[in-house]
Length: 211
Image 1: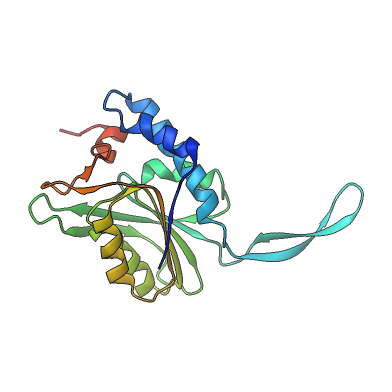
Image 2 (image 1 turned 45 degrees about the vertical axis):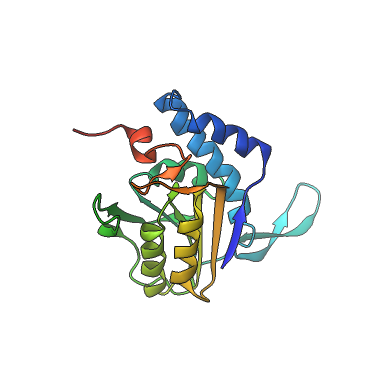
């Protein structure tokens, strides 16, 4: 597994505002999208392309286009939805699927409650979006799900990660072709399995808490 932790000053700056408990919901959402776009640049460095011929106003040249089957972007509901626009801004022709996952408050284990994905992902590059890599359970389950459907190349993009989460992903994926892109690698987890220092619950800060 390949791991990339961003060291870009703009990402660090935006993360600092994102972490602040006083940052408003609209600004939080905007920053998640902006950080996602910056991370997507690195995440798509090896996106598959095909050569094409392009007629410019003055000459004919060669260029590239995204190879078919097109990349599949998979946000993990609900917090991953906040990253989707930032990703699609960079690759607007990519296709989108969804995985709904929830973590038990007691066991911290993930459960898949919904999915909207092609049955056959053979030959697809998949990009999984999940803001918080905490225990790694949800993301590991999502990656396994995609490989079982036939995907052969998965890139996971997270705003924040932990050493515990990284180890869990490494343990799960083995020698499969997986790249992990992180905006930052935080200290670890507290007793409630929240990231420290983290930024709180990303889903709640993006969308509020339904009562």
